[in-house]
Length: 149
Image 1 (tube, rainbow, N blue to C red):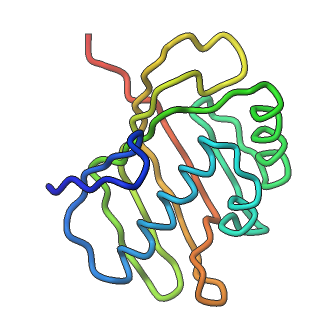
Image 2 (image 1 turned 90 degrees about the vertical axis):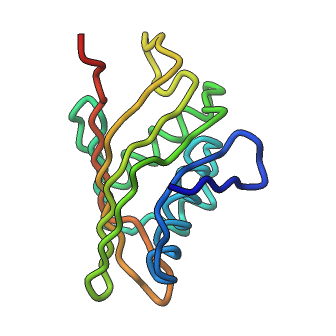
């Protein structure tokens, strides 16, 4: 595994060596993750497909408009995450579709409500589609990783 760091000190991730195309997909996923933590609607508009479906860790399925409303609500309440890491990422590309699995580790209150845990680890699956040379996320699903007792 290799460790790469972005310009911001809050971001780090480990990953295997990717092909150029896989790296483009991974970079897009990181950009989306960072935009989510910052509630950056402009960036999310660019990389989230019009037919987007987001299934969160609680099993709620949100279409694009509902998910954007969730992000806007987080922004209105001053909620953001100071850090996010990608681990154990695997990427498979089939034509104009990319399939990503991995683990996200993030810190900070991630949800509006009574979620007091400051560290979250989740397994995710993402599907991206290439549209006019831009990878756009069309599907996201996440599940909390629960520590074995």
